[in-house]
Length: 383
View 1 (cartoon, rainbow, N blue to C red):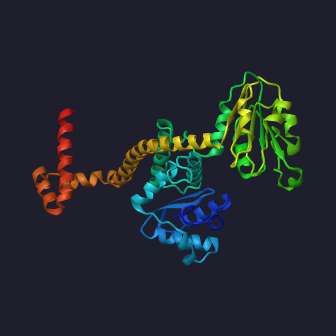
View 2 (view 1 turned 90 degrees about the horizontal axis):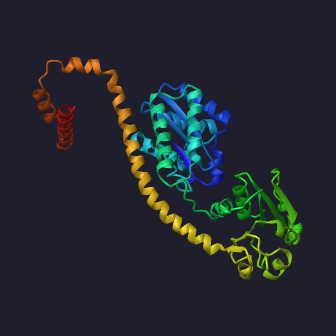
């Protein structure tokens, strides 16, 4: 049962979110139901999903209990749900774990969240055989895709592409010094968080004094906040300057920049604003490289093409792993029945069994049986 970004707005998703305490309480509550043998609760900012195993009545129990637990009428809950069962539920789990169902295709943060949700279920004793097999297989599949393809390593968002340019910038010694003009804006904020995800980077962010109410709550000791009007005073010490504002005027002009910085130092200036924030003439300054939004949009377009090719490879891997998981779950009940089956078939000639099969299955099913028989004959001879 899924409430996700595909069908529900953020305010709706918030209503169905589960805190860690609520997850534990809800799993305990569901496991008391006779129809339910396993439960996993997965919650992220974009989805709340509850996986159950058990009898045919398990899904009905889940819907009623979820509505009651969240204090929502069942009729209202059903408007926002995506329901999956049987093999479609297994397929959905694999798509989620592999990042195929995410807002950003192939993102791998979801993998850690799936692992945590499964571990919480195990800790509560809420993971039965099917949950153990399917979640372990889904995690293994996602890891294989992450290792064998470039799906999760091919960024599309401008903020991520900008951060990657910062990470790639080569400096011989010491921390990289980065200025983010417009740090409190949506794009500037995201870029700042991205570049602070790695060590060795010091950030100077500009804010406008008359918009001081927009200032970020800066807890990171690698961030320094300065007034926008004083930005040129700090630019000479910068290795990289990023501008992401919505203003109509240049944030950096060639004339003022050349008066404030020493020529020759290797610098990277990044302008992701529309219209442009930086005077294009600064790209002619000695040692300075200037990238604008067109550069990043071209990168994103190229990466989209790469990502779609990688997606095809990833889907092949997923289908292979998914098929293996379904076979394992389907075959498991027969392991316990081996002795019983041996007794039933004992003394029955193979030709008698084959005629019985022929007379009780469809032509398509018979093709599968006969193809399997041919395969067994080959394997035994080869063995």
